[in-house]
Length: 280
Image (cartoon, rainbow, N blue to C red):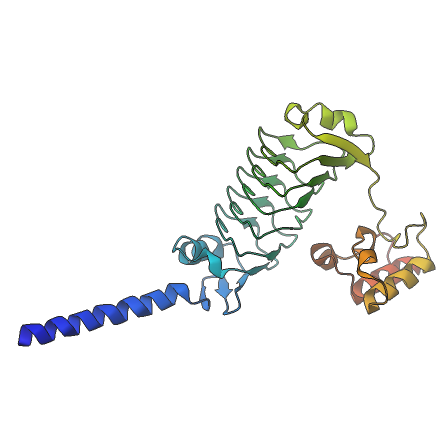
């Protein structure tokens, strides 16, 4: 009788332990050194030390689907190996201008991630970084010096890639391999020959474009009070959505990440027009 009672007690203890352990990994709300994940799937990363921490706790533990939105705070310098691998529900991420590298397989298998803004602080995009991602387009900033093999390979929905540097970064083999929908690669005016000389870009249509002039919000080839009026209408919501997504209006670092002009951009343009600052 005692053995039976003890067996029942042990079974209950194991069951409770399993359930509580399961709740610990399956519940969205959890945190660690330099990171926190809330019940809505918002992951906030505040330090480099978080990179192995949250990956091991959330992703490798079999719960990558908990992460929906990510904010990486200023000061973080890299996105670690396999940081968000197979986080299929990841929809958005904000990357600060302190991040210098996007490491191996950082976003591999992130099929729900359709867009990302890579800040102009990033120097390297490593092997498999966005392998089989859901990206539909990507802009490679001037700061990027090299992109590893298979970095964007098998991203089936990728239709457009834009390079902002006139000097091509070092591109390894199969960077855009099996991106079946990719038809156009945009490069700055005057750099067409340099990009066409890259052997494994030969299968794509490479076209030149004029880079946007920051501050020329109404696109009349001048920066003046008319641009300030235009930007004000965008910020207060008078302009339709089609006119909001203009890089010319992204005057501050925060706006470059969110692509949504704000009052701070108005202040920046006003200060430039009145001579308080010398450049945009």
